[in-house]
Image 1 (cartoon, rainbow, N blue to C red):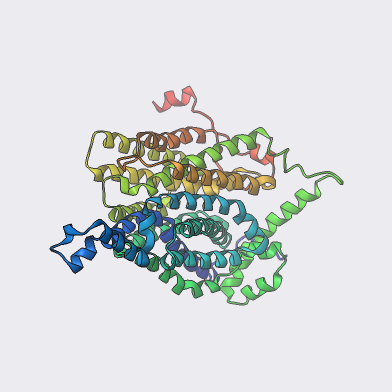
Image 2 (cartoon, rainbow, N blue to C red):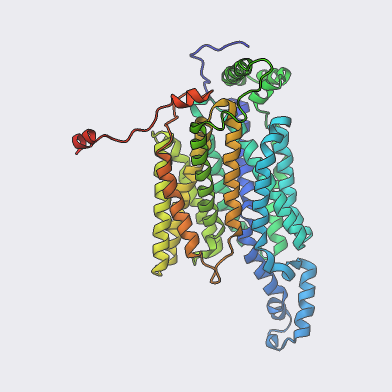
Length: 499
């Protein structure tokens, strides 16, 4: 493999990089439509059944005798409505859709990484995007409870696999010096989709129209995703050099970009090969049990797993209950997406991984605590929701910072396994939040808000035990982890001098 000169840098974004970023941004934009479908499904189902069960029907047929509709006529009209949008018979069970979706996210986290490593990120991404669009269409054609729950579970699997493959593709097509931008840019596109989905749902009068509105744009854009290139790192590991040569021949900018990316990937591959060669003949590589039992790895695994579970509880707890703050669900969902947009500016902050994580977690917990106090004193719902959305913004920043932080904390020999365990804890947090029953009054319960506020604050304290990893090479062994800069509390002399 030809090594690059140290001064080689891409002059601009190459056509292949631009194709990756543009297509993945579109994928994330549409993924948010079904991610928060449960927020709109209940409201649209109520309006559909209210129209079909007699209110809208009587208004069209006999406005003066609307109150004289007999129970038998109401049942007949309900049956007629069921022939068009038969969600009316099981609208009370729509709350299980979120649980089914969270189960799908958990299943996707278990199989998504292994499938993408085996078959490549591009084909898995294309299959999941197509299934995601079909899952949006099925409830419009066949509105049945069991099928809806199964489709929501499959949608969760697709969303998780899309997330895994898209983030990996974006990061692996980005130079090492700019790898903080994809975890910020893709959630920004996701928040734009959240904002765009709210008015589309508001304009959908029935259950069928809602799902058609969510499905048709995705189906139209499916051909655009065929031009997404495969990960150059995966192609190098699988020795598919003819595909890489085809990418190089696209343009001089693509050739320069690939040379820079593959130089970094080739260095990592050599390190992994040297680690395998250091294993004694006839012995077993110590990466399975020995490294995972090391106190440094165990401590970091515990902290990052806790941060993932607490962040998932807070983020999805606020997202999925956005209509419980006393504000209209459609406007609340729009401003929920708008509140996430400032996360795009986080990479511009000159702080390291640990300070940003601690600050984001602390602010998130404090904002959720303020929202809890305001709701107890019956303050205006807009202020309560604004404080909660500020907490969601901060916890989102902590989530995408921890995406890179987890990669940089663990040694190469167990990095993928540890990151998978951390991601599993994140999905368990999503599932635990979905299993919490709603309050009788429709508002977020006191216990839930206490968890949403206390979890990030405890995580902020735990972050103090982690080292700073920005601008430091990735650790290849536990010894490299121990050599990373450790946090030191300020001495009394330093405090006296600053005072």
